[in-house]
Image (cartoon, rainbow, N blue to C red):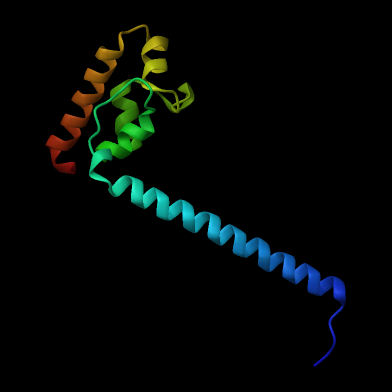
Length: 114
């Protein structure tokens, strides 16, 4: 077997360590995410002002597009804002925004998408 250059060995070791580290990171992230969202306490959670639309959508099992439409937010409107921020930017009370989102979720589920 031909002898490898020491720099190549270190490069291969580094690549292996990096690949292992990334595998562990994303594996742990996947496991924690799965554990969090299978907990019944996080399913259909009561909406609060601190929650972003994506969190609410995940909790209520509703696609992002449906959530954005119900909230009156477009992709250009920074969709990762909290419900409180969206309500403030729209000039409406948080309770009105939450009611709109709940109506959108109800309509989505009523049409057989649950």
